[in-house]
Amino acid sequence: MAETKQETDSKWDRVYSEQFMTMWYPNEDIIRFCSRLIQKRLTHDHVDVKRKVERILDLGCGNGRHAVYFAREGFKASGIDVSAQAINWAVDWARREDLDVDFRVADITELPFADQTFDAVVSHGVLDHVPMEIARKAAEEVRRVLSPGGLFYCDLRCAEDSEYGVGAQAAPNTFVVGDGYEKGLVQHFFTAGDTSVLFDGLFRILYSEITERRFGPDYKRKNSRWVFAAESL
Picture (tube, helix red, strand yellow):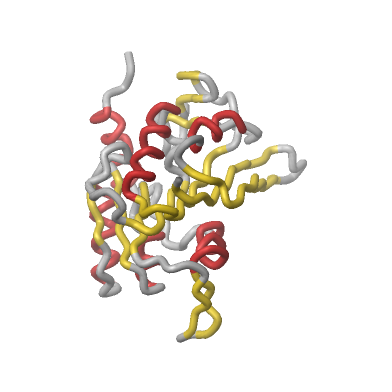
């Protein structure tokens, strides 16, 4: 029997209520995305603007690390997550830093924003934690809320990752995490074909990479992720 949305949301609340997934520093690839395509800070009070961007959404924001980062950089930042506990953490963080960030509990397939609200959307480690059909629906929602030519950053677990095939298989390239703090959650590992299904007809890829980190002592175990920057069609 397929898991209900309420059951999935409850698992994410458990993860955040036990503080397993609270993260306080922005992902380096998102910083590079900003520096490469939006703006690069040159001095404390001067930036090199690459593209006019005002409003940015963090899709699946967790406790808010990327929305807070963009708010610090002067953008109008928003963040959504299915976990009410994660959003509570995020709201408290923004309040402590006196930052105006619009955090909301929401589903990635039903974004509570009007069409063309944002100039950029970032998604770190989110669309690979849902079944493929949900990821595609979320990508369609991202395109809807983006302005024409708006930017989309997305990173995804790659099928070359050493953990591919670990856990009970739920669908092609999709497995249920069997232990650890993400026990019971879905992990999809993207092939090149899967990434085409995700983006085709919605976005034009500006750059794509596979990042890889190998672990000792024999360096055979590796973490592999796709990194995409795209613009809406």
